[in-house]
Image (tube, rainbow, N blue to C red; front, side, top):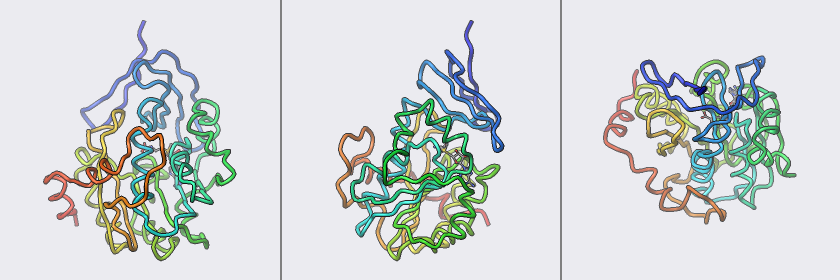
Length: 278
Ligand code: SAM
């Protein structure tokens, strides 16, 4: 007998993958959390039935969300804040940059961190690095109240539903701007450029309303819906599209060529960004 996991990606579209074992599932105070062993993606972390990360394709998303801003940052890049990202995959990529002295990860759901530590050790082992600190808190409140200045903020959140809604708001980006050094950058995962054709320009406009430079880039992540996945960068000083720092070694997706190419946007995306919903 085959057991299949099915994700309702958007109304009228589903992705199914064959599951060989359900390794863990629980209802946390925030969401339903599961770890599935699948044929195609290896171990998969789902939250409320939505794939968050998978063993086999995580490198694409995590390298893209971390190294683009990090390799475009021309100044002192020592202190990095990750909002969400409780699986540890983004933190692992950030800590590959030796110049980083502190990486703080603010995750709302301590169970995501605990379960990732048990079932996704390759990702979560980064949390044992002496430069790493995990803070269990709401990222919206943390960014609103924090007094320290970060060089980079990475928003590795769930989709804009439930506790993550505010992470896509103009107020949150204003708080991120305040929490950054004078040459700081903020990068966020901002959903599918195809399926979320109205939401992506709206989020982009909120980032652009708070940062002098805002750019969007794309990457295709096999386990995420809709082909091109978008990331939005707000920058106080540096052009995020231009890689200037050499990347760490042993990467599987990111390279300076991939970096530049990721900012080449198809006309349907350029037009959508030019006309955000009012
Ligand atoms: N790569 C993933 C994706 O785009 O599907 C995101 C992975 S990571 C697991 C997302 C994390 O954001 C979740 O663990 C969730 O608990 C956390 N999260 C959601 N809202 C949050 C908030 N307001 N503050 C901090 N963490 C939050």
